[in-house]
Image (cartoon, rainbow, N blue to C red):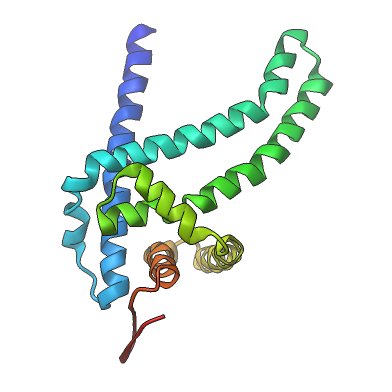
Length: 197
């Protein structure tokens, strides 16, 4: 049993380290793509200098979200010893309904933090602060546009028996880079011309 638990922990750690590198690399690549119109796969492997801060950023983000969910589920956890199934279901549903908008709000506040880390090479807390500042007044727009992009992507994926994911995934990743450039007022490549907002 102890070997299985140790194996699971190691597997999760390796997965976390690998996913962090892939996510940072993907952000670096799509940011370059949005600015220049050129796809440079090498950008995925050029995140070494910010990798440790990226680990910290992703860890803190997950910790904040898990903390919100845990606090909202305290009534459910308190009801477990009573074995009252109905009360536990109600507490779980209410906790989930409270947690969902809170998690969405925090996620939107921190939406640009990874981009700031990748683009400006700033410390983790500054990335959080910059994201919070630039997302002020933009949360609703980003939320609604994210839903539209997600629904379009899902529709294309389903209509192509999920083969369309190969095409949709890169453009869905590009969404965050384009959003970052627009919100921060940086130049954005438009086919045939360069515009600045």
